[in-house]
Image (cartoon, rainbow, N blue to C red; front, side, top):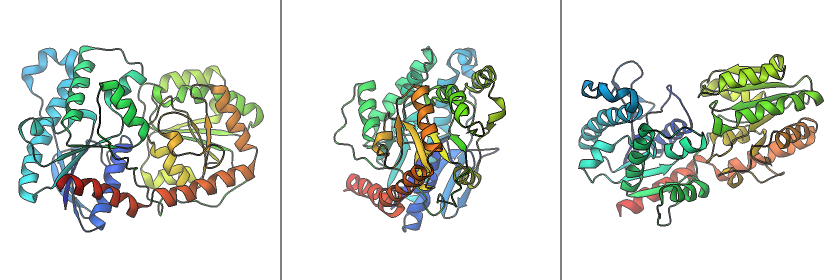
Length: 387
């Protein structure tokens, strides 16, 4: 089977979980004897190459000067339309040359809009990661004409799909409510985790590192974690908080808040790092924290659990579908820095609890997220669509 993925996010240009998923799934499908192709954004210039068996096509959109007069107010929407045009031209070439059977994309950005506006084949599969329209609402972004058009474009893209895949039950329900849609029994297929790469290391009872890995974004609850820091330091003054991830408008606020709380010496900010370095940070932490106000099915939780770490996360969205509270992790009240701080203190102060949570987490990931099983679930969806 020949499967083409559309993803503006693809290593080494990494933004979030979509790029991680596409990279892992494309390589797993190749390893299973299929052919995988990815159309993604150019880093410096357009190019085609093979990445460990996966055919990668990097495209670069051209700026249409006819729209310059309205670009200041509609820049985000125009950027998506211009990028989609570049992607759609490449889809036409790749689909014809390589006889593509299935195209899979996330819901955001409508990356193949122009192609599917004019064509019906190959069948389009959309996996719900988290729609941009929902992200705008969760981040409390002001509604503008630009964002409204982006949301309408995304809604068209979701409705155009021949098959929807849910990453979690939570995202399926939220997307249906937000866009007033009714999906017909969409399958839930989790993302694969490379458990041979994300794996436990030696445990140290003296370790008091608390890790946050993810974008510095309002909906990720990073401001909640910042407010929890002084309470934790009162009990464990040697604790160190490490934030890893790109800034999405919150870093300055976090720096000001941490300065106001006089906790600068105990906090470190690191820009997003490649996976081969990220695994070291997971392994060198005592606790991994995901304080989100809403999440779908975050890789930050899955990767930390795969590394055998105690994960403390908000009980929102798809996270309770991953973590069994007080068995394979700790669920806390979303938005409550007190609940978060008390959970961190409880886990830092109990090495036996850390080991128990970490061991159970690792076993769960091994059982549920084994790459071979996840690949077969994806292939089942593709085959049913082609039948």
